[in-house]
Image (cartoon, rainbow, N blue to C red; front, side, top):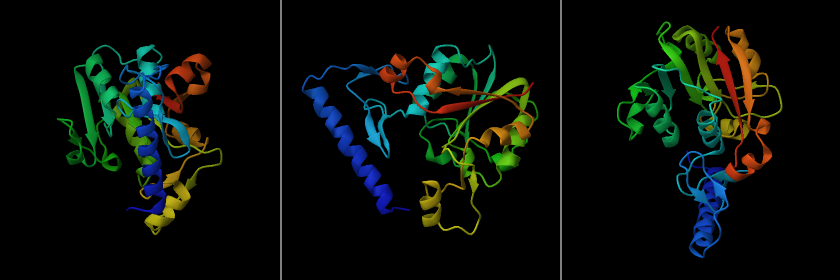
Amino acid sequence: MITFRRASKAAIKWASLATLKLRAAMGAKARYNCTACGQNVVGFFRYGDNARWGCPACGASPRQRLVAYLLDSGVLKVPAGGRVLHIAPNEAGLVKRFSAQTTDYVPADLYPEVYALKGVVRLDLMQFDAPENYDIIYASHVMEHVDDDAQVLANMFAALKPGGEAWLIVPLWDRPTEDGHGGMSQRERERRFGQWDHIRQYGPDFADRIRNAGFALDLIAASGIDASLRERHALDDVVFRARKL
């Protein structure tokens, strides 16, 4: 669904990207670096309220750059020979890293046909039944789309091997989580939750929902990284590292 809000965000994004490309062509110094693709860039393009959102070279978002940094620095680790399930595998930099770190990489989505990436399997998280099958499950901006997040978290817990981890990222605001309902129009969802296909908007209490599914939980926030690195790589967001003990 195309709305004025979405069209406006897209127009601002492309204008910002064009400005960055012009600055680069005129010889502006590439003082910043994208952790996802490794390119040095003159800046990051605006998207929505974030003035330093996307990499002009590869399009990586702040959350993708954060996870790439955490993988490269060893804060997040794929165990040797581990099996990785990557839900909604649309981040090229992370697909590359996961594929390099394990030979058992499983990209999956409810709609695999929308991906150019080969080998994406069809997976409905609501019907997910794969007991103790994965070492890592990565899902970024997925949980706000599912009908029943408690069921999906329970399914993820069951699908992880003992000692396995789910790395989850969701859109966050500073208020309690607000759930929608099936009768909401697309326009109302966009107004309340920021996007027409979002079922809810998460707050800090998302952590409680994760713990209620049986996980131990660590929060890895970009705000905890050295300020000079955050600035150079334009890192943002929070990874909810849910551990099955």
